[in-house]
Image (cartoon, rainbow, N blue to C red; front, side, top):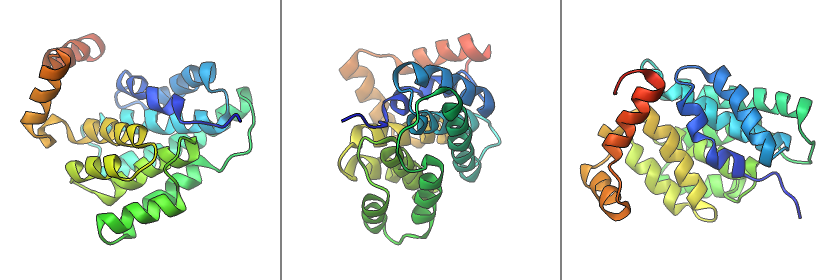
Length: 212
């Protein structure tokens, strides 16, 4: 069974990175990239939402509400462009699902209650209209608490690898590495043979002309 999956959204983070502060450019590039492997309007909308949110999060003046709104707008624009050049498929509106997920995140009580509501009403599966809106709902539930958002993404169930990755990609660009325990970065470097600080500096020089 073919579904409008979250595969394009899962890999689109770098498109947002190279369009720092330019959500429209991120959307246009996301549509181009997503259409190659996931040519369905819902998948394209989900990828565009993530790319636009990442691009906006890299704007030094952006706050969480700005990033969430960029994701909603990205989903709407991505769906419109996807319908023009993609393949139609019966699927819920990614834009409206993000709006609903953000509302759930903002009004829910404890983080456990929020996870249950998101799981029950939005879904956490691999469909583009489930896991991607769910990630936005988690971010909305955790303003200024990136660690809690990551924990929710890991623990919410089902396609947690994608949900937590999207929460990490968008939230990481908004809040920066200062919001993470230094020991986490050290573990990632050690286990994977990385030097994340050097890699980030190289990418910053390549795309922004200066280390950040």
